[in-house]
Structures are given as C-alpha cells and as structure tokens.
Image (cartoon, rainbow, N blue to C red; front, side, top):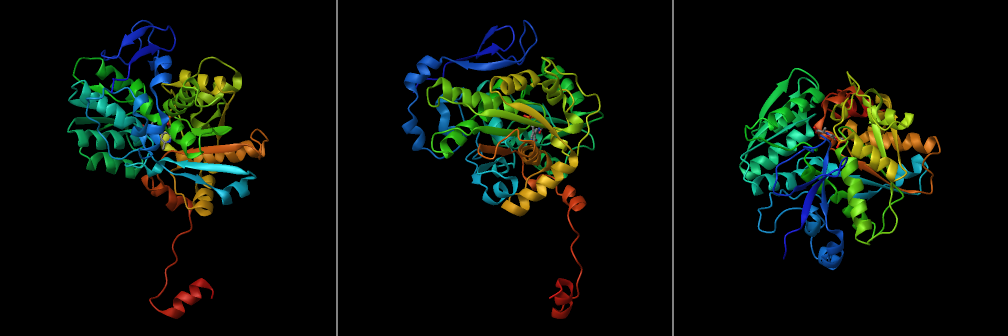
Length: 411
Ligand code: F0G
C-alpha cells in the first residue's frame, strides 16, 4: 500500500511545508499549521469496506492518518470508545436522541491517547529520542505512557499544585521527568514551545503539533461509524486549549470531502466560566480572543486562559453554525453527578462541562429536544477523585453487626 500523501499548511497565510520538515508553527506568519491531503486521490483510494473488517479504533482509519506504512505504530489500544445511548439522562434533559461518547475508556483514561498514538509514532518515524509537552494533566499522562511504550525520554511541564492527583500519578509511574512550573498552564506551554525551538532535540507533542490532531479527528469517524453512517445534529465538546474541538470538526469535514456524508453537525464548545476567552470572543462576535490572565475553575483540565488553538476552534464553531457557551463550576459538578447517577458514567469535571453545557442550552431553547446530540466526555472520573470528596455525601460509619447496619439504613 502507498504512503498517505500529505503536507502541512498554515491556516492563516496558506504557506506549505513538506511532511519531512519538523515545524510546529508557520515560519512565515507564526500561525498554526494543519495536515492537508489530496482528497481527490483519497476519494478514489479509500475503501470503507476495509474499515468494517478492522476493530473500531484510531487505526481502523489508517488511510486517513499521516504515518508512513513502514513506520512503527506506537499503540496501546486507543479509540474504539463506547457511544452510549443515554436514555435516562436524555429524559431528564428533555431530549429524544442523546449519546455520550466516553473518551475516558481510552488506555490512559482520556481522549489524548488518540493523538498520542499518532504523535509518538511520528516522533519515532523522524528519529526523535526525547518528547515533551506542557499539560494540565491528561496530556502529560498520555505522553508519558506512549513514550514509555516507545522507549523515548519524556519531559512534562505542569502548573504547580493545579494538576489532579490521578494524572500526576500516571506521569510519575510511567517514568516521565515531571517539572512543576511556578505559573499557569499558559506559562508552561509558552516555555515548552521555546524549549522545542532551541535545538535541544525535543519533539513537541502539545496540540499545536498538527499530527496529534490527526489522531484526535478519528473520534468523528467513530461517531459516524457507530451511528450507522450518519452524523448527529450537534456535537458538544469541552474546550480548554481548543485542539480537540478543532480536530473533531476536521474529522467530520474529512467525511464530507470524501463524499461519505452530505450534512455536518453543529460544533458546540463549552468552556468553564472562569476560563472562557473563546466563548467570550464568540459572544462578542470578535475574530480574536482576549486571553484571561488568571483563569480559575474546578475543572483543572480546562483551566486555560490563552488557548493555543483558539483560531481553529472559532472557525470550527462558525463554519459549522455552532456556538460556544460557558458553564459555572457548580453546574459542572452537578452535571458530573447527574451523568454518574443516571447513566453509570463517571467523568472528570472538565468532561462534565459538555453535559452541563447541554443542559443549559436545552433549557435556553438553543438546542431542541428533537435534535440528535452527542456529548463528548473527555476524561475518566478517577483522574480526580479528590473532587468527589467535596461534592458527595460522606460514607456512614456503622458497627459490625446487623442491627447497626439496619439502623443506619432506616430499615
Ligand atoms: N477535557 C479534558 C479531560 C482535558 O484534559 C482537556 C485538555 C480538555 C477537555 C480540553 O481539550 O485542550 O483540546 O480543548 N487537557 C489538556 C492537557 C490541556 O494538558 O491535558 P482541548
């Protein structure tokens, strides 16, 4: 089989770069890059009947992933997550057709694994020995795991004291060199980008690396597959650094360019109130964001004031006739419990932002009860167990005999 022909293109000035070049941002204008394909030849060569023979996973769609055929795939079994038809929650929200795409089912418990399988495979393909990222937690957990799998040195920069315990534990146990930076995620990202550009042999795996987003776009293909070859009316995604919503939109656009679908979903991005520069720009109809200097939210994964991929995200939302919305921390925590108690799905606070956002949008009449909606829940609840101690009832202490238990239960 042939290699997948692709190149990198600047989303602003259109400059092209060869796939063999290691470049993260446009050398001409400093904007973001994206992977482009020759869709005409892909339309002829992609045979979807082959996909049906492969397990539902990121690599089911290998013809649309920019990795050379001879290259090693660094894989831990990513993708293939459930699309749960959520009847009880749908009823409580006033919806008829509602699904949860639960990305917490990925190997390290978040959607980041879709991007890292491709990104770390790319690192190996180009001969990198050392990979790095800045992270609010999940990216570092995922990169650390895939780097371990590939035998690469892994360096992660995290904001000090603001990373949930489970994620920190993951980065440590997988053997990453974990540096806690005095500052925010935005400071950590700026620093790691500078490091990657300073000739010390660091391959950068934040989502400004366009290869990572190619892995993450497969979520859209899976939803299309799981719905039997159609796309929903709306897809709701929590937004932090804004790579994922951009990636998912690109996946749906691919399906359209390949002639596999004619309609496209509205992309709806949800930010936490205290960290919502993109939602703010959307609300004001601005073509740029004003970064939030001190972002704050209980959803630490999306505690980001200056999202790197804001421009891609705004385009995704505008081009799809979607929208951006914000939710308060209390709404996020309520939605986390609601999803757990009505559907048995435990997600971390950032993920629950998509559910909280949906609830608000249905109440406000922005999403109608008739629409088929998919909410993406991005990370597993066990990542951040401490939050549950704050939001749920404490266990009741009882004596070790029947009557004591009966009394406590009021039975
Ligand atoms: N949900 C979770 C659980 C996340 O970890 C993140 C991002 C997002 C949503 C937002 O995705 O950044 O693509 O808009 N976490 C990054 C990290 C920033 O470092 O783990 P995004």
